[in-house]
Length: 216
Image 1: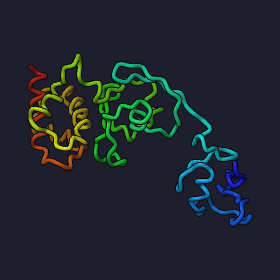
Image 2: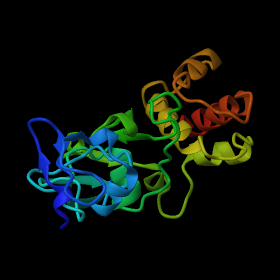
Image 3: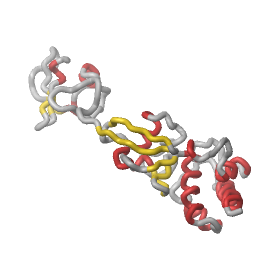
Image 4: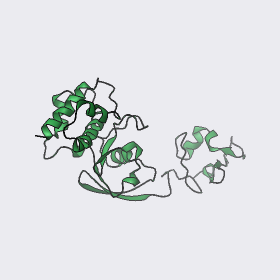
């Protein structure tokens, strides 16, 4: 490990000790990207381990979590900062949960946690420890589409499909509580989900289709 990678936590400074950088203290955010790359990090990386930078991991501490996802138990050691959406997509490969805005505005990352819809970009994976999570991959049963999935297909409720998993998961929660919704109630339920392709009319029709089929 190059000595330039030494880190002093009290001041958040790196002491450069390679030719061309001298010996003075330099704030870590002022270092040239090549210095960070030398330490094994990309420019702008802000997470530093104790004592010396470790290029093999971003944190000295990992946290063990265990949760049920779509009826299957998963146990992993993860970084405390890991968002649930990243855990689902990057660790477990459940890429049906989409990451869109990173600001909890678009709703594409919505999943069901203990029976209620939640935007997984605003939930830390450690917060989901011990919970039951359902993603879009767990909606179909025995090879049969859920009425919501069927409704989006039959009523042409999608175009590019990027927002569709989040829309479906929100509506799954909504219809479980409001089995006979009005159009206004459906539109209100979808207020936290953004579709950039359509005028929402067919999405509302898809929800109505599912409500009618689920209620018999």
